[in-house]
Length: 217
Image (cartoon, rainbow, N blue to C red):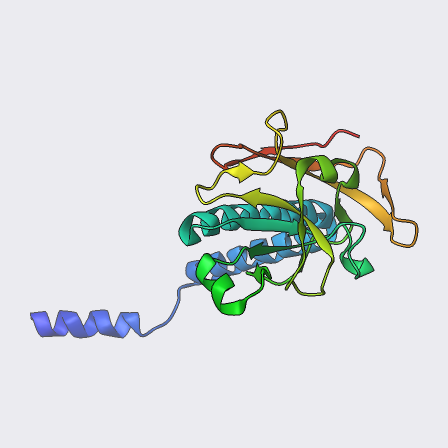
């Protein structure tokens, strides 16, 4: 049997398709994946929502910090507080924005903020803790921002990525809670023993983040 004959035999075998063992292996993998998808959809929604809120906030805070460094200007992680004109956004929505550079101010002849993102919402049932919000953020004018809010509570990042604008004794942090919010009465009712509560702490000098699993009642 010469070399050419051996090559032809190998090619013929390769064209015969998958073996029974290979097909069974693929079917087993597909069954496992379907089981994971079903369990995620039916039994893990609260955990997924909590993880979604954590990922959103920490990702946006890091983006704000990096934008401040890259643009060499002040960048804000802004939060819609109870005074935001859109009730659906109150204590649940956030956006990134920055101050104008001196050149932009000279050209525009105003001091409007520059939005870097649109308003984004936390997963359903998760809200920024209003009781801690005023102590952990600064209040800045909402000039030029989507929805025309009069003022916005915000975490303020300086051009070195550091947190600025807060008293020295304050440890910057954002508390998020599982709650029910009544916009007409401006009342946030925290769920008893909510497992989804968490705090994102921000190191003042570096802007680095640390997750604390549960917010205090």
